[in-house]
Length: 306
Image (cartoon, rainbow, N blue to C red; front, side, top):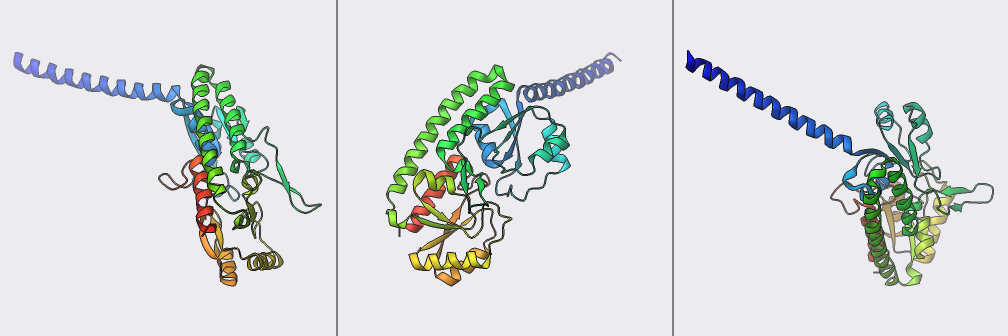
């Protein structure tokens, strides 16, 4: 009888210890989750910059993920719930996220919003009477520094205890930006000025053009939803033939059929894929903003310099 009671006691003790371990593990997971700041970024490039600055103190959800097109994105009820639970919402601004006001209203979000382009000098392009702001400001590393400062300020505002961490991460990341910009400029310098003409599938590289002296042409405007006229395409084909532009480039979020038509009619080669509005998936050639900048410049120079 004593042996049976002893066995029962041991089994009960094992059960108690196992349950206690489960509670401890569960509690530890909750504690870790509670210490991270929930941040929602509107698209993948912003999500990467937030992670670079926030590090382990943030949990970042990106609404428009790698390889996805923010121009045609449609918010879902799940996205509204995600935004509602965030401590910080980071958007590009300059009209890039045409859906953001609708989403924040649907979510009831009343927290802090960081507009990453606050302080950026916007590019205005287009014909007189129909001028638009180019929202793709992240294509300039000078502007990337503005993004970093704005995001770091927003993180410190919602998480004052992490301000020193954000300051250190910002300093480190700014040094990385400086190093990448030096590589970008050195790579471009290797390309003769007369060969710095690029044709891409949509017009997302105006800031890169202004910063680094490369001229871009595209049959489609800022938004991938835009449709070029037959006259626009014909003029671009004539320009490619006249200036003997050797290569055209697809961007990672555009339909390539129009560019294939241009290739057929000009004899130009497909020079490669550029990343414009979205990063590549993890492990791809452009899965961070700085990798994207290096990949694009190296792809351009490799194709145009031959």
